[in-house]
Image 1 (cartoon, rainbow over the protein chains, first blue to last red):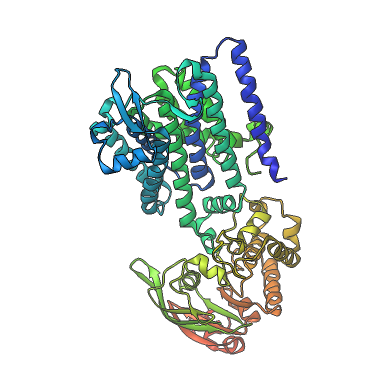
Image 2: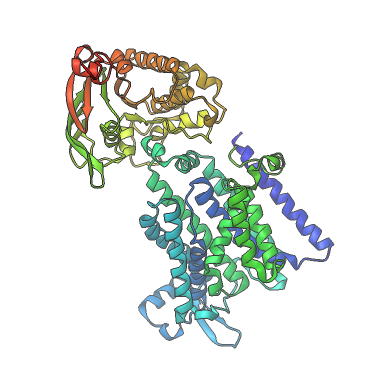
Length: 355
Length: 255
């Protein structure tokens, strides 16, 4: 019975392969690039869905966590350590195999940290920042929490825009591909397109399995009880503060994972990833997906980001997501799939993930 | 079992409890009655660890608990049924009940083995059966969303949910609030039932008549202070209580 919650994962896996076949048949495999990028954005949305949909804690700062993950990965894999090659810390890292040598576009020799080391540091750093920020702001409720996280997002944006090491307004380009295992690598160039399409989906599905597992456990029940009535949950002995903080950190790490992987995939990251409009976009997607609905969030995360990356919304990109959020709040604050007329459809497509 | 000494608490500037002392012996049903704003709910919230005590002591089983977080107090066997029920309406009845056993479920702490942590799903299941036995309606409705229950059923769910933590002391905040008189009767029948099973109960009520009918002893709380205490019989007979809370000895104004 417990395995039942994973059936949609299998179904999705089949759909992913079918989608590949369809794209190959239509000779449109170039769509895969945007699907891959959307999948990494969907990681943020899945994490935010846990935080917002299940635990009921709003965050308008998740683009900040995404950017911290992405920038950490970018800086550590591109910053040239050659001048410091003999410094004790750098030689220790070299001895431990945490560094690599490569040539950039202009043929400069670069000694930098390996993507694995950078990836680990990105998750760790984001987790720590989320812990410090969360420890103080997660006690706030409703609008106040949203405002505090909004402030955090603005700070991250300003730091990205003003720090020379982070490339200021240009961001960081030249980020090397992420060699995972053997020839498996996160790389945005055309020959790796199909490989990366599946790689991104595997990451998303693993994230989904983790998230589904979480919401179907007693932890998930505790999160929903906090969402509904924090005081009552507290009086029953649920440590509300700790759970809220834990899910906040977890969702930040999901965002950082998306940020770091996408940075390796597209080979660059810029301050546009840290803007508040990006945070609003993630919130809008979780809302459209149905708030406490992981599958809805994932599907919408991929679909809407895909459309946006394809340029379907043109220069109205941010406007569209802003409008979506406003519409959702007015007409379907519980999510599209809870609107009575659409509910039948909803139960057909994706059963409420915790029903 | 429970001893409160000179307890003071409040919200911000406001001092609500002004030095309260009371005690509850094992197996007793003790009631605290008082009007609106007397500090009854504040008292319970402070004891449950939701509000911090300003000064004074709360002793449960010879342990001082007034500085402990709510989840530890629940785990010690002291559980609150909050005022106005506070059930989780978008969760099913069964999920609500299981949340009550939250503090008992095994936490992953391999280095701290002990009877407290060995509590497994089986014993939670058996408590669930006991609660179902006590409130048959909850079993019938176990798969239904809790928000669809009637007020009285929700109150029963709230009590059942608290019982899921297997408390030794059950604190109830106005269980008769907002339910029909017939249901009040039923809820009080349950309280008598629980008392017969040996559960210690601290009952906070505005409905003095109902509370004094089941209680062994009682305290009268007025503007944050205990003004009167005694056995339920004594309180029922006391003219002050009769006038202020039981509505007897009504006199017209021109007397």
